[in-house]
Image (cartoon, rainbow, N blue to C red):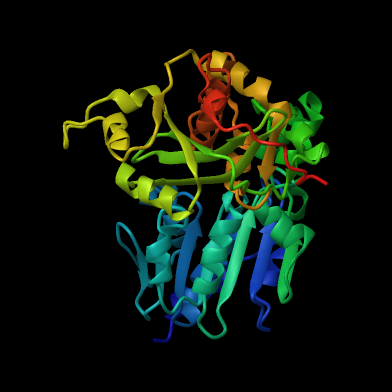
Length: 428
């Protein structure tokens, strides 16, 4: 269907910063990457470019991000706002969960982390836009990229860098793939950068140059502001303790849970030795039962020493009348429930074990990201960091790690009952 003259005129009036011309290059490009600091118009530019493309020809667009628990977490509102701002209401129908063009164009919205099976079933995507892509893990990229498989399909990526160790920054900026256009876009590249934001920019520049460089210039931080385990993870990296860590089949594995359902359940797999703590695997997911997790644990073939549960494992389920502890004990696994202690004490317990921890780089990657991003809340009144950790999508894995600290420092350690074992020489 040919666009009306009114819509053609609306499109013709649109102006984009020069660097955003990369979104309209006609040659076939698999990845179009926009990264940089605040105020560069990355999301604004991509949303308008996609809406224009959706008028010129029918396209199917998947708007994805790592975490999306509801449509409010998506770019649905951003696209809707741009439709009204550009005067394109006659072409696009905005529904609660999708946006459709009268010519057959369609925008759909999905989270990656909690919708793996759903993503695998999505067909016919022309363009996948991954927003806030700094949060996307290696595992999620390995799932998403092959899903966008239509001939000539593209993946557009926009993000503000946080850490140089974040997977998206490593994958697309430090080591970009073939057939990728990577463009850094900052406030200074945006000729429409508003004065109100420039005031904010200059104030932060005067107050905190490191924060300024990250927020406005798109330079990754070495650590997250307010990160709780920043020094400990940095030392683990510098000392080579984030590496290939083998599983010792002669030694039992401790399974340490942080329980959740709508929140993620997070699990660390740990082997204890006299001079080191090996973290051989980490995994997390939400809306999975304890029976699912027990089957998953068994699938690895590890010799299980003890399953460690947090204090809330003693709560009775309304559905079954049983506790998580009771369900786990019924499987015959040695099970212990950790006492409830103040969060600050468990953080300190975790810090005491860090110097002996070795993390498997591949199998604990998501857990390490949780530890890198685990941070204190900002007090809304004082604007200073409080002593309370922020509850977000990284906190579950960090909470489970805190429980490892409690487990190792627990006075009646199960490890004293294990068979004496000679330290292996896996580190060379």
